[in-house]
Length: 367
Image (cartoon, rainbow, N blue to C red; front, side, top):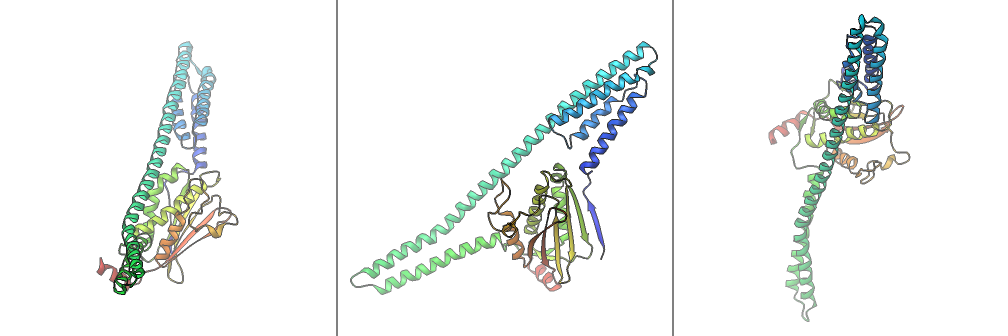
């Protein structure tokens, strides 16, 4: 079985920090051991830019202050290389100019960070409002659709009771009212069944889906989110994976939910932040996809409730993501489960039956 590994194009947080320190030391050495009028302090701006990937607020200013101090120290150390007072004066002017450039660059970089954070908060607020609005619209739509047959049931039930309460019960009219009750009750049940199919089995015809390609597309979609939280995405995709018959949008919804959950589990306190996505073909011809993280792990003594509706370990969570994901996978005749990762974190796995040629031909004929 051949495998290939695809890494998100980004340095790990530790590698980025080491590169930043080495660059700062290189700039200092160049400044300290060359003539004062040879200026390298402008490269400290690049040090600040690189530090902005893992520093915020006061920490970024500490980095900038260190760069300023190194600029001034390098100018003092290079004075013995000066030829004449003019060169020393130029060196001092260049050092002060370098300090000013570092300060101004840091100010604008921090303003950019603040603007980006404000944008992200606004996007999150907009997404929350959109979800609430959508839920309100959906609730109103369901209430409108279901209210009519229920109101008809109540009306016909009252009429049936009146016909039966007469001194001489009118059985024909009562029977007709009872028939209408059955009809309207069945209509209400049909409405609810259609809504359930919308959220589980889906109304869209299922098509052959290349799971490896879907994984790659999902990684591309969430690449910026991973970089923002300094998480490395790694994929290990088996080369002989057959297609599955699935609703592509629903299957991607499951992958997005599992990946976002993994990133959330690592963004606070995880020393190693790596999210691994793997695919393989089981002996039972099931396409198996696993998403493993190095985060906080499964909730102690509550792992069996992980897929329950409204159960969540996040302060802002709704507890519906994993429940909906499992319902989608099960509607595709698959399985979704979770196991602890070693040495820490969690692994979420789902398995779907590989399609056979007959299923593919039927799907294409119905498309």
